[in-house]
Length: 358
Image: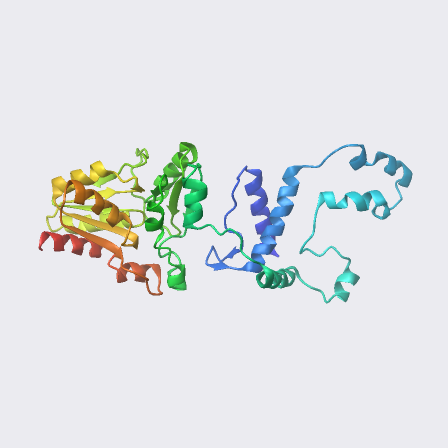
């Protein structure tokens, strides 16, 4: 009962605050569990909230002043035809049971969750998916017409590592980079995410943005101003350059700290925008440090490493090491998967030492 009350109040307060998007429908345990019957209950709650926000028509018919005079203070309005005709305008009930106790008991005393579960079974048995969002749809309906949609990719990479390869979102950079007109980015921390979202909401450009699920340390300076297509240099150095995106930026900084203890000065670039990539920063890094390591929480083919290599191959060829996933990943926790693929401070530092011959 408490969970239901909290969900209803949460959605009402969110809607009253003016939000146009609600996140977390059908989720339990802070997003660790998704439950279809709960999604249906949430959907019904949202219907009620939207009906409240829409307001109520006030005129002679809805006020029913003539009927009030006719029925009088001791009459029963529920039995009047006017009530039957307009009651549906005020609310609709799909799952919630509005019958009296005797009728409810006679029907087996069904609870709300039980009814939602039966409705879920019915939907799953009969539903046919229409027009799923796919890279082809992004290309044809958004990018081709330069439609200013912002696609927020929630829980990318290893976010659902324990659910296995079918839930690892690791190919998106490669898919989206191949689509013309589409900006592709992955902010490194909450501050940069806020700045990037404000930019995307007002830029008028088709944009694909990764938004991570788990907590990561802040790396963006307080005085930072987000600039699409520009890398942020977080550390200076002339021995090797570490270029990272999204969740790997904090790990690249950890690698730079490890290398600094060995007298190796590593430049660290936060390449939040993988398309268009900051070619100027990549070329400068290649010419000034002579070696580049890239790190990303995604497939190696077509992602950040590929984008950097495309620039260096044409303008300033240098030795590179590309850290990421060579293919499907095993099932495991986020920490296990990062460790498994060498996407840690130690792993990035090891790749830099290899380039330096140490």
